[in-house]
Image (cartoon, rainbow, N blue to C red; front, side, top):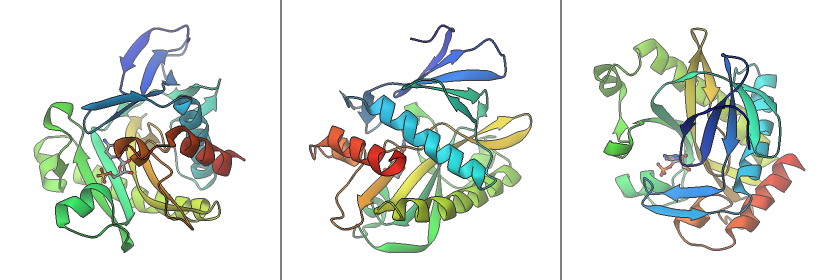
Length: 234
Ligand code: C5P
């Protein structure tokens, strides 16, 4: 367990202080929640998988000139990061129809979306993270038009890096969620990029290799997370 003071506990992670005021330790738990925490459970070793997959993705994005909060992975479940002020917006990027998009618009799962679409959700547990547009976020004083434009551009840019990366690993990146934070007046990618926050379908079988196995009680959840770790981190 980390030595600092816990300053935040979320559904899947805890954040601890470090000796440096501008850095925090992100600790990845095995706890799993879905449907705004109405469904709860444990995915054994999920924290280790998500920490290592996030490390690989953050390093890849940094190589492509995309700034992230990642500094270094310090243990199986801990990652040292820059201490950001999180923008309370979930940026969802979609390459294939699935999940809430299929449900909301009555579309069949599996159709390709090209170019990818971006959605904004207002991060508010009490409201159940509602889908919002730019005007709503401006009304809520959550983000300026310039920040929203930057998040949308970064969403597309990150997708352009991640789609081929996962394809090379025989995984279809169906959709994913990003969170950004402000660090020294700059917008950088924060949180995690993992099978908790992405939909991955096996290229051949189209089987889910992500948290949908937990959401939909598909079984073989731990096996799927370990397979993602194997394909991403070797
Ligand atoms: O449920 P929905 O289809 O809107 O999810 C889109 C993507 O965003 C999925 O990859 C899902 O895992 C991710 N997501 C997330 N956290 C949420 C909501 C969605 O990581 N609170």
